[in-house]
Image (cartoon, rainbow, N blue to C red):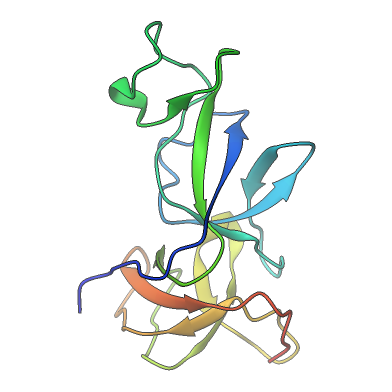
Length: 142
């Protein structure tokens, strides 16, 4: 099943670092309008939908950084904070599995007591596969 997004609740945050290689990874909000990749066990706030860098193009267009200029030299990240989002797997996943944040912002099968970030709507046979996930942000524990 190809990954897809639906019923997306998009929020924006400022990219304070190069995130061009982090599309479809879990993030946590930080600072006044920033974000960082989620770490293992984090209660993720959403999924990065674009590829923002910390350097905007001079004319404010998307350019090769796939971010939106914020006018201050950074670019804007589009983050899916609700609905169904495509997320990079950190290992094998079966449809219906409860998922948690793994190291580097990937989704892994939730262990006992983990913060559940959502439920897989597709499967992955290995790490690096993009899987559609129905996001939950209630802080459920596995």
